[in-house]
Image 1 (spheres, rainbow, N blue to C red):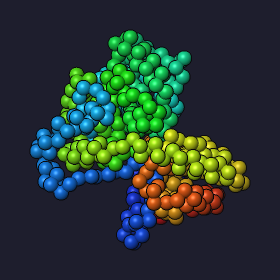
Image 2 (image 1 turned 30 degrees about the horizontal axis):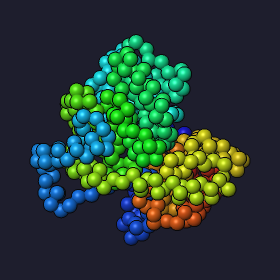
Image 3 (image 1 turned 135 degrees about the vertical axis):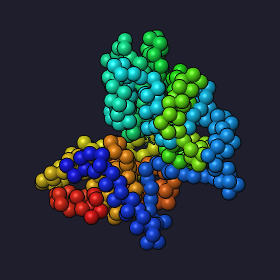
Length: 387
Ligand SMILES: *Cc1c(COP(=O)(O)O)cnc(C)c1O
């Protein structure tokens, strides 16, 4: 394995940041295209920046955060966190004890790694289901988790969503929803309701995903549960700070679901081009993707011997896309343990700067380069770590 653990992933991400920095500083930075669908936006007015003091900012921003957050997410009370992962950790720390069970229902594996890591941390038993007929809530369950849309944008249907909530509530067990991208994908594209309107007790979304906000976690829910999670977050420093809260508010104001719907026709066009050249692509609601399994299969059908693992192939392709085609996809820059699926999101701001034909061309060229490089493990390592 070239990238085999969290430390390797850190090295890989630092290498990607080096390439991004060099590209920006060489003056060709405007030609970097971020097609991840994570924008890290920071919309703010000059005079708002003067409010960014530790105790003044959050006090001034609180009412707006509540109004706009509840409009976006439903629920009774809103709380802002540093990341979605922070919201997941804080909720599990607050609601789950050693020896309890946590059961998780989602459309498809994998689940976000922070859920499993947080369960391990408190010493809880963790069970994961993707089949409603097999879904089972044991009696010692302290928390039921639903993922609205997975890291690979696999979206749960509303009927299953409601059924899982009903089963949990019949046993008086609270339901937490990881709606990182789902809070927008489910509602804007699939006409579903916000998780709290479907009965969830807590729901968290990433203000970085499919909207123009900063990386941060926006949590909504029933007031008593929010208060428990908020207190726990403050104990461990997981809450969002004033600058992030300000940028969240402005991104929520700016959010327009029509932008997401507009990306569907572009997605259809790109997918039809790609399907003529490759077997490995699948559609997502607002883009296209290649899973690690599909990538490995496609590569194996085209080269004699490639000894790289499926995840290493994803990291390598993502680094080639970045270094040689100026396209940012998630595996190059991702956090340890995140999905290695290569995804191109046509709702990203930067996708408007490229014609669909150009995106196709860049994918095509980079894949051919991947085929040349992947047979040489040493060269692959050099590209992944930018050595
Ligand atoms: C992105 C994502 C997360 C984590 O978001 P961070 O901002 O990296 O903490 C959690 N769950 C799902 C389903 C995600 O897609």
